[in-house]
Amino acid sequence: MNLQELLPEAIAWAKTQAQHVANHGHALSAPGLELAHQVGVKNPELVRLLYVDQLPIPVEPPRLRQAALDTGMLRPDMVGLTLGHSIFIVHGHDDARLISHELRHVRQYETLGGIEGFMPIYLAQMGGVGYELAPLEQDARAHEVRGPRNQWT
Ligand SMILES: [Zn+2]
Image (tube, rainbow, N blue to C red; front, top):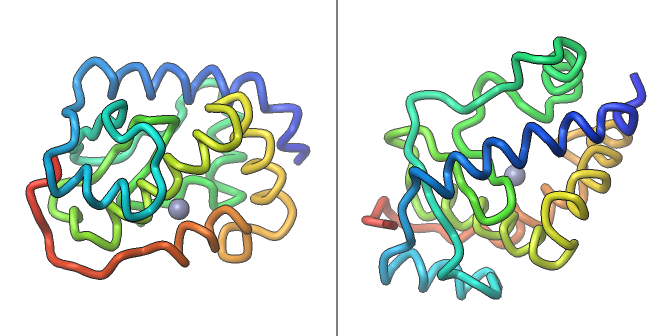
């Protein structure tokens, strides 16, 4: 499976989901802004966070869904997903570790040029070395901040 072939569809899907969070999510609270600063987010005021029962997974086209699941890009046990400045968090999983991990992905999007810049690199890493060894995931893990749940928005 050549993930790069799916790039236009993946980007379109990511943008739609990001817009949903931009419309329905919440801005960061003072503790949320603090955590964003800690992991290097340049524009924390643009971050929106939406709590959901389950993370979105592409339904159409089927080959995008299959590729996302096959590569481990979207895993059934996932509890956070970041697309640009938009973060999905599954209810009950909002400890500092997960929020800081997702905020570090925000920083990566900022550095790499948004969804269009991030997605080709992320997909290449997923298709290449996979989730555990993907440099963007390792970077996010390296910036996790341990701490309790908080009011992040
Ligand atoms: Zn991650």
